[in-house]
Amino acid sequence: MNGHQGVDHDQELDAKFKELSLMKKHKRSQVVRVSSGLPHQQSSSVSEQEATEERRRHNSLREEDRVRTVAAMSENFKDILDLVGEDASRQGLLKTPERAAKALMFFTKGYEEKIADILNDAIFDEDHDEMVIVKDIEMFSMCEHHMVPFIGKVSIGYLPNKRVLGLSKIARIVEVYSRRLQVQERLTKQIAVALTEAIQPTGVGVVIEATHMCMVMRGVQKLNSRTITSTMLGVFRDDPKTREEFLTLVRH
Ligand SMILES: [Zn+2]
Image (cartoon, rainbow, N blue to C red; front, side, top):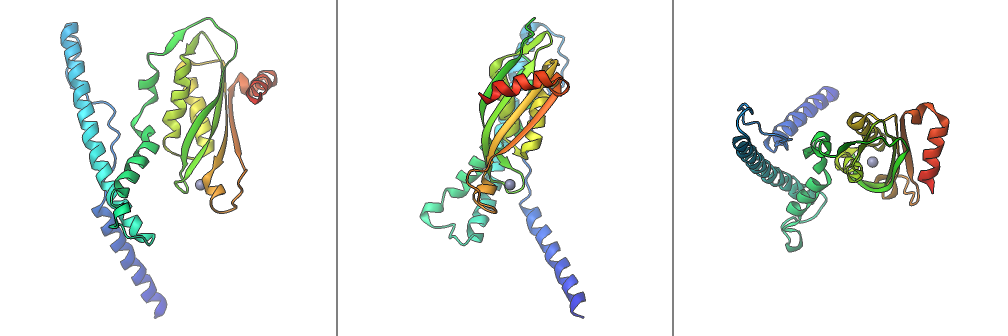
């Protein structure tokens, strides 16, 4: 009954795997706000004090969580070093698990940020109705299939509808979404949707051109292949002339 034994063996291995991986389970929490639970209708000085206290508690919780997450990640990176055939205890590698953990935390810091927190003080009423374009915003992200980088440039255009967004904030939207595990198609769309939700423009266009290390360093190993994705919303989708204007300006 070889087949039967095989199934048992697989289940046993599977159970063992789950047990072992549970021992190391620590999930980075997305601590975004700590509510004091108090009503905010008191005098402004008290509210300010409260707000400061709330921020302080929020920051220390966040820091505590970060330390725990880096520690748990470092343990796992130590195992990975051994698993690739290295000796994790040799001198040159002693601090590598912690460095790798901190680097990965940085590459995925977008999980700790919310678009609303970043944009709320940078939306302005403005009667400008010409296309606004920010092009060639540098982008560094991590492909969610292989956890290796894909890097490139993002160009964003929109047609305002009574409201504009501070220009530097457009790059911040890119940062928040690209510093997560991503696929390029979703990243493109998320940026377009975030901009739409923030200022309800008449139209939005986002184009990303990127090189994926999972294609360059493994698999097909095509050094110069680039992937281009685009999302067009509103008039950028419906009106070929607007779309063409955007694409022409982005290309040059
Ligand atoms: Zn990949």
